[in-house]
Image (cartoon, rainbow, N blue to C red):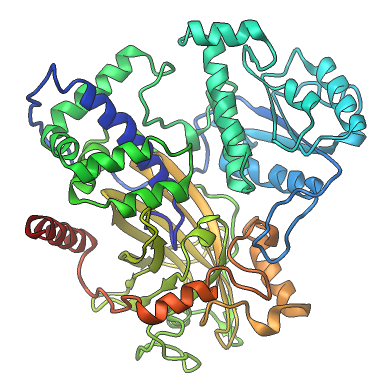
Length: 581
């Protein structure tokens, strides 16, 4: 997978790329029946850390909360936090997605404030660029918000509101020159699609889609898209764009299309000509923005070697869209320093990852299973949609690296459950704390770099062992990664156990608080997680485990074969199966 244990943002962007690029290619097909073969360019180096951004301008964002409960986290350990809790948390996390100013001052590109609507004074929103209203629905809340917006209107570039806000609050929505309640603005946006008003309407539509979901990541990206798309300041995490668009302009759109045609003609022709790949393109075109679950279901339901070859050529080998997503270096997640009363060394760090796998290098408390860990919860709604996620970590026969083979269930569009499997290389890396402490050169035990190739895209991820119980009854792992050529950066964390259930002795008291502290060190609250409560698992519900009894997962280890060799083998196998069908 592009994301560890099903973080699917890069797949969603792949979906967008396929829809836009192949649709564009197909529109030219009659006029250009022969597409020339081009030279394949080698892929660029791995994604760089976002220590500083390319922006020199600060964006000011105010998050205004209503007084009710949010409805967040319905499948989390602590569901339904207040809107104030949500705004406070988004205020904390949002700056970490934008990096620091390019002048080297260390100041955040995004500066945030969180305020209750009932506490709003008339001048409290003055100087803000973006206001995000969440759950502002009572008459008092909407009146105070309206008064503050009136005073601040000269500085405001965007006003966003989630669907639970009242009608008056939602009527104030704007993005740049586009005001939702203005009939003139709506007419202008329709008649002149290249205008600034039309750009604003498209940005607001995009943010509306994201704000309909109860996901912190979607809310954060709604704000990032508004800041970047309206020209407030540059946000590296969202500046890459795979779509032909009015904002790119006709020259850049034509240049990108020409590069695709010159470099990947045969792959484009094969993708358009294959019925199953064409079906995938049509279905992906119907999927909403950043609907990671829907996008991945489409791809898995119609996975073809033509689809992978096309993506490999367009994105990875030729970088036709000039995407360059950074690996986010914040939050600065601490590394577990001790385990079983001793400083964490490389052997112990390996044992934590290997977990409960039946392997000679496993710890003496390993349950000797066919897997290392099962995921309990993760910071993405895909943990509800793609259940029974197994992690298999095992040493490579060469050097200090390990392999990671995630195995998980996907329900296809035909309502059939299938198993999916991927292959990562895992290598020790140096943690930021080693540099701050002036430690000698070398890797830091418990810090890892993971690399994979999936559906034609290379991703790099930096994992950190945050905490693990001495008896390996649970572990919390953090990751920050990027599918650079797909323009996707992502972060998150996982709670893992041997059986996929919440650890029994951590449902309350110090055990629960220790897990909470681990997630908070990753900038995550328990209500932001998906997949389980402390008492009930959605990832491992009876409906899934009963199916698993008759359809056992493919838990055999892929072994010491390179990622590219394994993917090539899988493509060749798929081609052979299609020819023999």
